[in-house]
Amino acid sequence: MTARSRGFTLLEVMAAVAILGIVFSVLAEAAIQSLRSEGRSVRRLEASLLADQRLSDLEIELDAGTPLPDGRQESEQEEFSVVVEVRPFQLPQPPTPGNAVDPASDEPISEGLKSLREILITVSWLEGESEMSVSRTSYGYDAAAFAAGLPVAGEARDDANRELSIEDLAKQLPVETR
Image 1 (tube, one colour):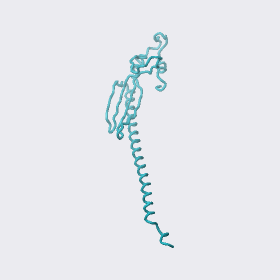
Image 2 (image 1 turned 60 degrees about the vertical axis):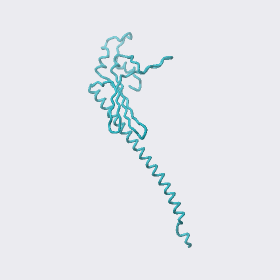
Image 3 (image 1 turned 120 degrees about the horizontal axis):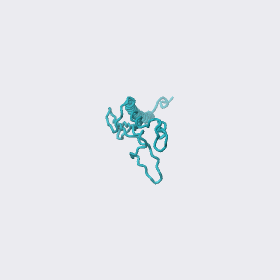
């Protein structure tokens, strides 16, 4: 046996160490990216839970008969900025040829729809240099005001000469809100 066949040369050891260094560098970068991604996912989950909680609180208020005031409320909770906006619900109007539809139009569709509210909740936070956000949209109504806007059973409805029921109002709503 010769001395060369019993061990590794210095050059072979250095090449193996260099290869291991490159592999470990790639694995470390992948681990760091994974941790960053997990952090973003955790913050997105926390923001989603916070938005769901705020929405749930508002729905409990509505169920208790507390009308929601229109307007925008902003608050801070830990690292998150929470914006709650309540506004009158507007039915989308189909565009007519040659006419642009103004979505901010205050023209009411029906007296019964005046008590419907659109609830928008946006939770935002800073992720590095960019702002991230999670949004929730829901719809609610003041039951007493809603019932007050409905005609009494048997009362004729304008020129249609038929009763206005909750089912009739539901048919006026877009499909995705039913």
